[in-house]
Image (cartoon, rainbow, N blue to C red; front, side, top):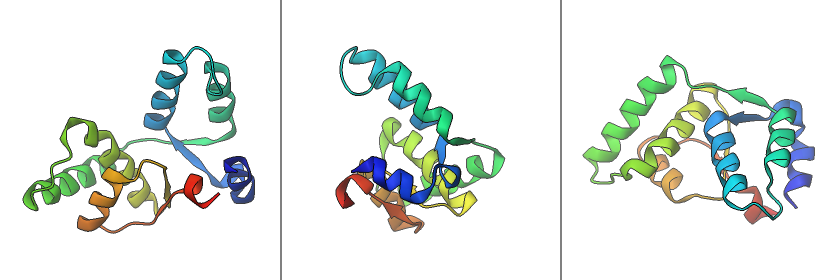
Length: 122
């Protein structure tokens, strides 16, 4: 299960992007009942440090987006946040963990980086 993956990695070794935090909060607010609640998102986010978007990430965003467009692989507006998240991981030398692989696998083709799907592996 995912909880085991997080515990094995050690919460102190994990970072959460504010993008992911916002996506989880949106999910919690849209589905007022269920496993993901505003309180669980806040508790989860409180366990992890945040990886913010600085100038190097924006520069890398531009490079990745230009390469995607040049290869005829535009990700559209919805892919821009995924490009930013990949940029965060790449500039920090981190492994990006996601279950939503489509955009990230396209990004890997123009700029390789480590990508894992803990939900698939669990």
